[in-house]
Length: 486
Ligand code: FAD
Image (cartoon, rainbow, N blue to C red; front, side, top):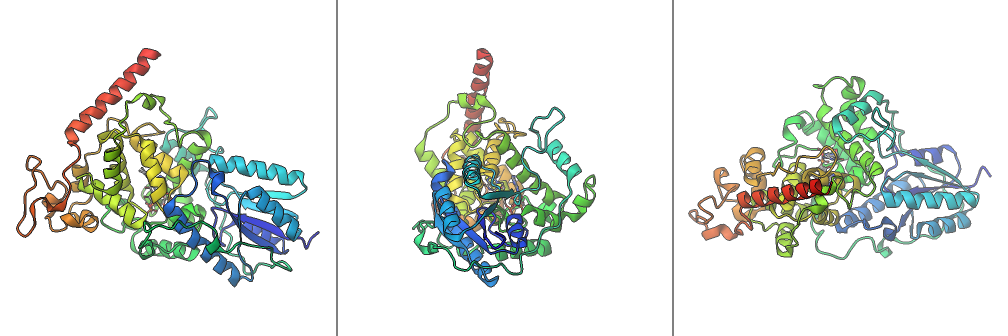
């Protein structure tokens, strides 16, 4: 019995260090079989998108390389997960299966079914939390319900914070007498054949080592200036850890302890180094806890009156937004950054989301779906929170009537136009004073010396003042029809 292998089912925890399931398996001193199962059909509507698949295939290759250094390897299979696990149990004689929990509704349901079935068949199943600071459902307000406002939620988290020291990577993993059958990474249809992800290598290094390098860069070069710099998309002032956190190449415990030990030691302190950063990790927690309490929220607004807004179905406007051709420089720079790199700065995510939902009156779900396909950090909890927050229908959301003005946002957060210049080359020669509103002369473009009329840059697809009024009116009607029904 004691020599029977343990299977470790890896999913969104593609790392060796600070990985509770792997550490528990290694501690048994029996052979360990790390496995990844490609089963996109088990993710409901949220199978990984194009950019995520690009990332995932590289992350799996790196994880396999790291495991081989420990005398192990990553066994790859395709789904259905239950069948793949059953087959592995049969062929290896494993008596135990460990995994770190996932919290997306489809994964929760699938995992519960897998655990039930395999336990009935005599397998020991143990699960762990390696991707959040607190188990969703464990932080509740005074009435035993979920927090809907971030600050009290985070204060409750800080009051209970007692982070265990993350376990180091195992030094060795015992291999089984013979390895089970496995698929080759190149044979699994993980990465889509597309030119859309070309060039992503320049920006990212998927995998645990890449995550560590990004964390060290942030600590050395950006952490101190983060509270002020985090809103400047032209600077590299944030950690860019989001895809690494999503795929579990680094865990929040490790990041929070390293960046925010001062905050964790003295939760009441506000002006300690790392506070602003650890707070963002808090927003990630909040997002996961909300998804747990409101599993329908990726599709449905928390504020039901949003379903009554008369949304537009203007496909042409949606395409212009997706392709960064709206004629609003901050919006276009953001959407082009997304296409070029698979990522977008948080401030700009808010600007483009507000523009889609309010200026174009296109439902937030259409924006969330586009982000899902194009972001390397696409994450069901964070994406849902981000979209519902910006649209104004989520927990602790910005009110709908707060409509971002892209030109004002640009002048405030990209004052010298650095960011727009990087992603909208048509405007690269405009001076800072003109770059966020290249057509401020009654809507007509003015040629600068050496530039052709219009700079080859699109005319604005809407008039911001008009579209703002239209949005507020649509919202007012939706609210008053709710009152009439009540
Ligand atoms: P940093 O500023 O360095 O923050 C560190 C970490 O904290 C991030 O990596 C992330 O895990 C977490 N974090 C930061 N801000 C937020 C936030 N507002 N909400 C939740 N967690 C946060 N983030 C995703 O990871 N995946 C998404 O799919 C996603 N979609 C979004 C959609 C919209 C419309 C908006 C407005 C925001 C979205 N975010 C999403 C949140 C945020 O924009 C990104 O987490 C952040 O830009 C990632 O960059 P960073 O790692 O440099 O962040």
